[in-house]
Length: 67
Image (tube, rainbow, N blue to C red):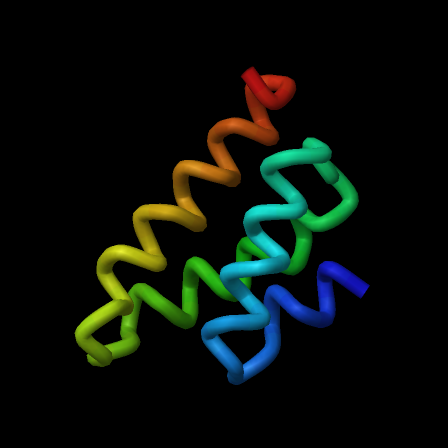
């Protein structure tokens, strides 16, 4: 379910999903975060750079064992 929320068009759902992924260190959500990061790389919305930074940080945390 979290992987679906990560890819949702609703920014609020993505925010909630990322918060839960970070809180519970859900490595299974990693494959959904990669395409989101790629999508945000080309997004032009005002929040895109901040969300991209959050996604990349979350991917780094998951890669490092959640530390």
